[in-house]
Image (cartoon, rainbow, N blue to C red):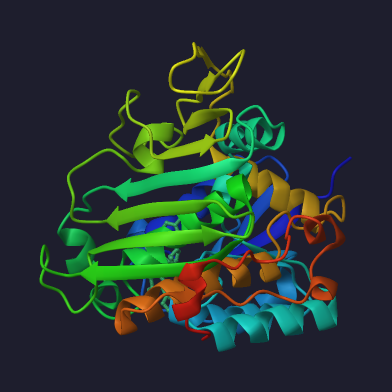
Length: 375
Ligand SMILES: NC(=O)c1ccc[n+]([C@@H]2O[C@H](COP(=O)([O-])OP(=O)(O)OC[C@H]3O[C@@H](n4cnc5c(N)ncnc54)[C@H](O)[C@@H]3O)[C@@H](O)[C@H]2O)c1
């Protein structure tokens, strides 16, 4: 007989409410607390045993796990409080608003041995997992070039309802691109170099609405990526993957394309193009569609968190992984400020989980590197 686990969802905003509804929907989880000093009780999902409180400290002694869905700048305080109390925490992405705060969370989690998961929920997507398997299988050869986009238009009231989204750190680099960075790392390995330009002309806010970047991967592949929350296109993961019914969708578009020495894969349609003989633009190619189920990765992430709380699994995206994706987006922001390419720092091999160590060959040096800035 499974013990029912008590959960506190902290921050009852856009995503916190989605987490709260999912906790209510799982048979062996109890939504014990919703913590939010500002939320109107009327709109907050609750169950028969849920208390709405203003401070995480009121909940920590009485829960088995915390889902932290506060604005980015509050992640540090909430995550450190949960870790200090020995309570595992699923912290929304990005792990924190600054690298210093993220490093503090990593250090505390690892020192105390308290599981911290970062909410990069696409890692639970069967579509992304299948795409990563296809690339790792060598079906497209060695990755050469990666194209990606996160083009979508957020409604205007998204910015009016939460002013933190209109200032530095509230834009699509830290809020959205960090998801794609994490997904591209899962598909093609570490991103070790970036260069970016940003614009804010479409919305005229203090925060960027659009960014264009180039990426250098540790395996030598190069990439381009464009993100905008002001572009009325469907070329984003949310709209093309069709995993979340809350978004308008388009089954014909892709958001990533990975081209290798022997073929290419479009994601998330999983249209795979390979050459049965010699790989050349004059030789015949075979086009297939790889099958993968479509499931809600937020549900799967919560299921995984439950396994972590029961001691049955280690976090699939631990704090250190969240830190690495944050390093990439910080390098993007730094490059956008300076106009220069920026090298992304990585952990020394000894600090990385054993499974990840072999994934990171030495960074190939090219002529481009002569101008790279170390942060
Ligand atoms: N995984 C995803 O797809 C996804 C989607 C949206 C947002 N997010 C992330 O989730 C976090 C929240 O984003 P959002 O869009 O839901 O924000 P939001 O502004 O809609 O909600 C934040 C909530 O936190 C509350 N809050 C603020 N300070 C608090 C504190 N100290 N303690 C408790 N509650 C506090 C606010 O009152 C608000 O209700 C951000 O880190 C964001 O990047 C993730």
